[in-house]
Image (cartoon, rainbow, N blue to C red; front, side):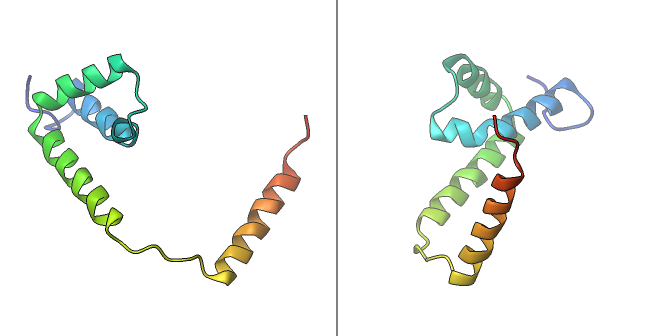
Length: 92
């Protein structure tokens, strides 16, 4: 495979697609064929390997963070926004 991410090539588009799929890939929700294509691409793409390693490290680091509750004022504002959006939606 050629150098990915090194200009306006089909490989660069593939790299962007890989980045868009990583959340689903790590969650295990991608179709088998998509996983195979993604892993085939990753095997030959150094920039994607580096990106995925960073992504994995970020996931691991955030899992180590302590849980914290939502501040009451933020919760109140969020609920107001969600209720407003729900009341604006047309009923089916």
